Image 1 (cartoon, helix red, strand yellow):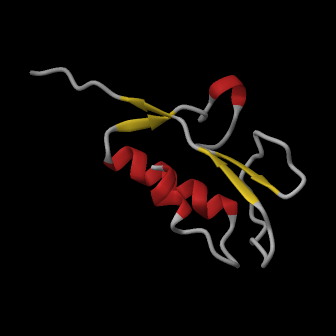
Image 2 (tube, rainbow, N blue to C red):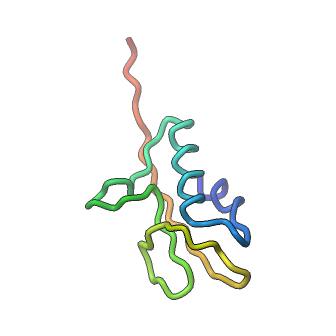
Length: 83
């Protein structure tokens, strides 16, 4: 999942968009993004840009040339009960 989300990093994309990409990919793969709603965290990934140390909340700021970004992706596999 980390590689999938990282492949979308480019100048102009927002971390909100990276969050959406991750969330949709998780659902498609029958897993749950662990950060979502954990201790009221509102997003599916943590994105730390430049001076943000960790646990940054994705937002609408477009990435700029030279930005340093850290992605924190945590997943929980969902079990489907046989019927």
